[in-house]
Length: 75
Image (cartoon, rainbow, N blue to C red; front, top):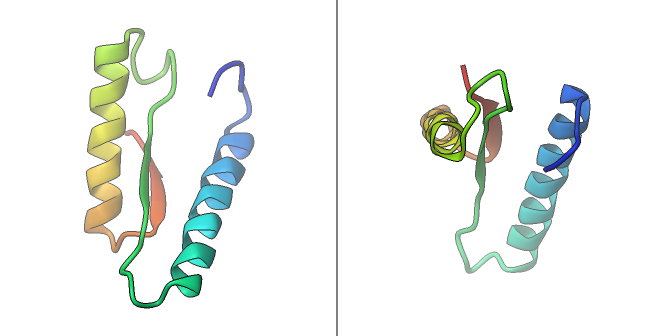
């Protein structure tokens, strides 16, 4: 997401995405569907794509370890 400076906006967008996934999963109960989101912030978590991607990926796997169907910010 570009030009977003409010962490709350990012959280709302992540929750919206997870809600869409959940609604879709309910429509198709024969399919196992879930989502996990890792979020990194520029420049707090890094200033280039490689670092930001790595931090988001780490947050993603932390989200999965914590039970999936959630989002996590990089630490």
